[in-house]
Image 1 (tube, rainbow, N blue to C red):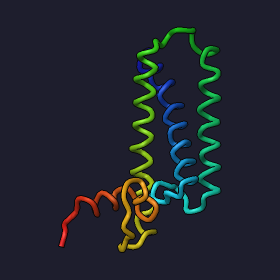
Image 2: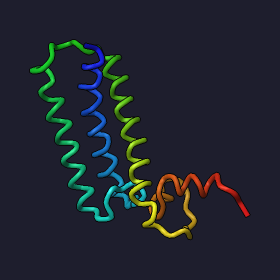
Image 3: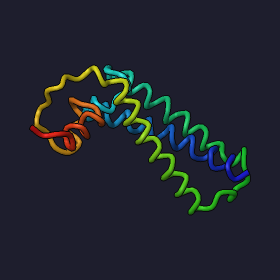
Length: 131
């Protein structure tokens, strides 16, 4: 029962996390985190994912008894869902965009590095061999 409840709560949070990340990445021009090179598709994906998550969470009390998941457990499941969404987005976007960006990069710091390279390309450039 506990595993079923944890999945029932974590999956919508995971979907919402992906939607928020795609929407924010599209808005800020972080192409390295987008699943599609066209921003409109990223915005559409964000709206769909967040909508599905909200629909699932809003009817929670119709499906389960009120108070079945305590506040601390909700925080843990939310953290888990958001963390998994971040890892999933970084991996999938890096796989999708690995050949889209060139090997020469502009100098950038912080999140701006994700404007012209994927997450793993940024990690490789930061910690890779230096000539």
